[in-house]
Image (tube, rainbow, N blue to C red; front, top):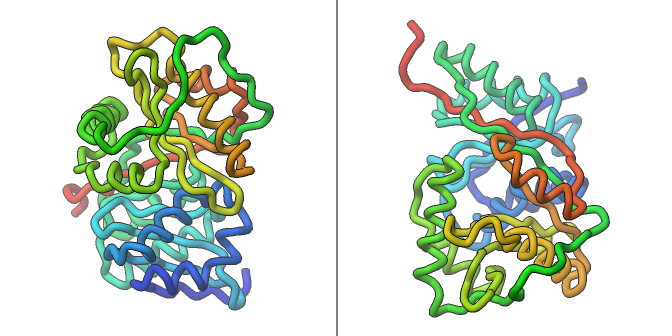
Length: 281
């Protein structure tokens, strides 16, 4: 396994610089972590970043950004996951939970649960998809367009509903919406008015992440979500020469089926664990 060392870093920009080679080596599976780290570096939001170095090179990451959010772990083997969990435990830092590739997250959660003698409970399971050959949905009325600033309140309403529906923590989404509007990364499928909203992140390593796809219940079963995602992926490829990825909850077979029909193929599965405060002895 070589020489392993875990360094805790609070400066997101410094963490991005040190982990640059590791992040760019797997821009599909590390896209969320990379994106969050970049946002932390740009905004100065408080966070913590644990870098696992093997023989002097970064070989794994755990990040908690913003502070108080669930930690995210990069895909690593069990030994690396245990090493990072043990280092954070020894530091005395408390984590609320962890999310990451199924094997890495499970290994980290298992070590954490043993260390604190409290339960680690699975909250969510998702699948990561990467787009292959795009097969766009035909015959759906409407068109893709960029969201406007005067539609901010509507997007906040829909994004908040998306959080509730998918079981995500209910947090204020206004800052994320403002960022998406200011960078032109929020889009609507419009058919006589907004029908579906989606976001495409700024490409990192040639990869853009499609997310926050939401159609209000009254507009569902008309093909709007599939048309919106397909058109947005086409835009990402044509305008930015980037590939698209997205995450889908395994509890929602309909969305998984839609994405597979569009040409997405599975890369890996992710688990989210909550670390209970109660329990133990």
